[in-house]
Length: 252
Ligand code: AMP
Image (tube, rainbow, N blue to C red; front, side):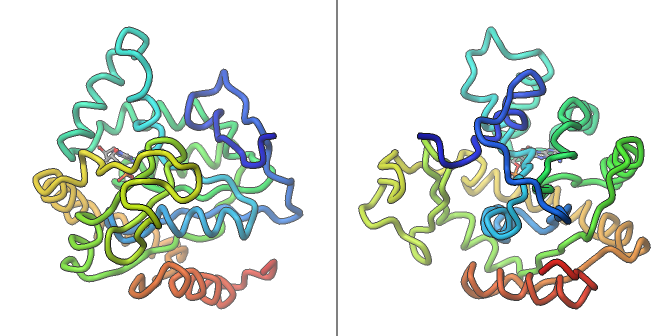
């Protein structure tokens, strides 16, 4: 029996339906997660989605899901996008925005949403602001996870992902019980090609260029909540909940 939402409407596009819709919440949480690649946003998104019953909307996961579809079924834009991803470069705003706009139904998810990896540029943030206004959906906060660059690089290069269920491990801080095998589903663990040293360098450069203006954009709107991402995922999660409480989040 399916016990977990497979996020098909998000990962595979608007013609697909999720196998298990999140429970509708009286006050769905709608959050954006910012932070450098490797800061632990994805892990926090999973923890927060369990806590708030909100859907984890990661643009990176959409590209990774597309990678598994046969080349002749991919659009030309997607093939170009996947090339960018493999090199650690950002995909064009046009492609990412189209992909998000096509999935605008997910913004109305009854459990709310956690946007991870999007927006990454001010142009994307402006487009998202417009899309949310058109859809009459209000954002609660923008969580900004912070960590020194050296720690981020160590985290990224040790990261391993399950090819099956996408669970994330780390060879030092969060190893699987059996090396190379997922604890949850027994699937094989692999190192993402964009976690290889050269891709990491390119990704960090792209992040550094866009991060400051993006943060300013949300700070001006009084939405930015800064969170230290040091320590274990559990510690960062606790800090997140505390930070949200102090921003008048009454539903916690
Ligand atoms: P992530 O898993 O969020 O680190 O994303 C993996 C890769 O997907 C990135 O390095 C980019 O190539 C691409 N990508 C994901 N989200 C975006 C975005 N919002 N804008 C541009 N490229 C993106």
